[in-house]
Length: 482
Image (cartoon, rainbow, N blue to C red; front, side, top):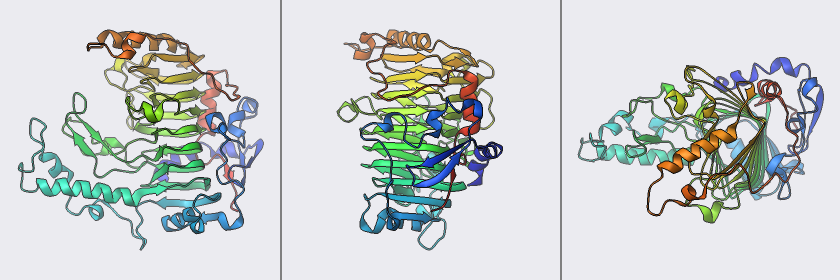
């Protein structure tokens, strides 16, 4: 666990010694304090609030387990204690506050042992699995005598890993970390049909999918499809994720086995994915680092029945470091992306960010079908050979986007013009008879919505960067045990 925590915690310790504001953690039922530089105290109201900001403040607000009684207040130190606390004496949806002490191992068996790949699927071997694809990319059980067994083992192992690593969080729950090392490894925090959940002061190391599947027909070069997110929200409402650290931790994809496309195997899915009508969500003051597919909002162009009019999400005051794509990638949603700091390097040894201009495919803000993204005063720092401002935004088949006051490498940037230019390129390349609706509708820098909540953005690139570097992620909030 220390592998993911050290990078986000060590830079904060000196700040904590100069705390200037007390924070009553009403949404967690805890007492705590948050450090903020005096010169930023007025601007950073969204950081010090004891109420969920952004979209999570709507629809009745989000306060998790606030008001939980003593019988529904827990301190847990392992997976078994956590699962019992989530059951809450048979009343899962009753308000509850769960304090996490130390590291929760999602792969911890009932007897305390830690499970690995061979425990989930004895005999599975990714090299053997890949050898069963022919030169034309077609799988055959007859390619080798072991191919049928490898196919079955991969599916069996994936299902067993899902049952073990998935931690389902019920409604009216606050999950908050104690100290600087509280969090999860090899765990998928699942919010399914949940309402009113708060996650704060936690580090989550993205779960490793030992059984990621290879699809030779996905894209021009084929692709891996991992199954497990660090946090998944499915048909859930009123979610506040605040001061969390999310990343690949000890298991960077650069170190994974090489696949048929000559690139490392992708063993992680999203850090925080939202789909199937998820609504009223805020991600704030968090540090997301060294990851590929980061935040997916809306999982398909054909999902209007579940997603249209929903997927209202605020992404406020976060630090995206070494993030290669989907920060976020949006379909349908009304998404407010404000005062975030994006930092990437073309030649980063851990997680390089290579934009289309630099010969790659990486980007930060991804605009998909019927998305309505409002970008407000975000700071993008991107350096290295071929680095340019086009990395900030990438358009698929969106028709609307608006930015106010963002910066690239600390200078004003015209993201509206970048997005409009990308749309024109894609529309000109569109094919079919008739053309798809997005290609004929045109592109506008006007949106059909404005944030219904109060928000005052920091108005300097240096202020946004300073906040990201000193006041995001786990370990900033000081949370006292109950």
